[in-house]
Image (tube, rainbow, N blue to C red; front, top):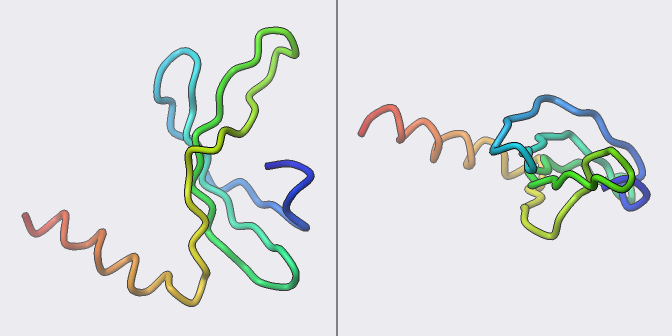
Length: 76
């Protein structure tokens, strides 16, 4: 979400369909780090992807718990 975050680092993208992508970023706001997972939509007028409100920002100190939940997917 360009302009909102103090710093952004794109870690990867997942193509959802021809008009949407999921962007995974490491971001910083007010000296706090987050993992931001957000849907971006394609704006044909500007020929670029823009952030939507669909997403979540997870504080980095909660990342170990988040990883453990994702690891359970492999177990099922």
